[in-house]
Structure formats: structure tokens, C-alpha cells
Length: 60
Image 1: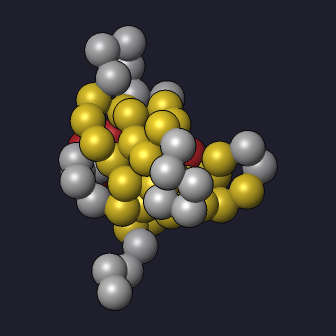
Image 2 (image 1 turned 90 degrees about the vertical axis):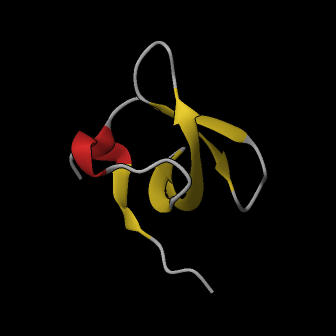
Image 3 (image 1 turned 180 degrees about the vertical axis):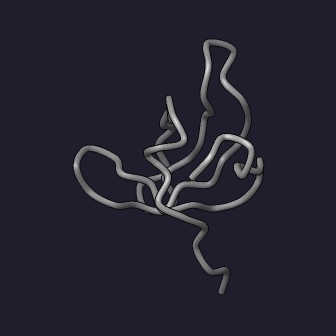
């Protein structure tokens, strides 16, 4: 994905610790990238680049 395609509040499939997980973007990080919440574990994660994003997930 590209940086301009990322929207805060959306849920994306992200590569976290070598595995793909759904992450809801909660805001921009002041050091670059975004902060989000892993919806499987409810842990906060930092996404440094848009390259880690695999695409938007479907909402059920």
C-alpha cells in the first residue's frame, strides 16, 4: 500500500511478528508511521511503513 491510502479508523491486515493480523489504525505516530491495535490480542502496535500493510479487511 501507499502512505496516502492509509486511513485512520480503518482495519488493515498487517504483518506483525512474522504473522498476518488484523490491526485497527488509531492514529499517527509522532515519530513517523501509525499506531494501531491488534484486534486479536488487543495490544498496541506501531506500523513504521505502509509496506507492512497488506490491505483493508472486510467488516462483519
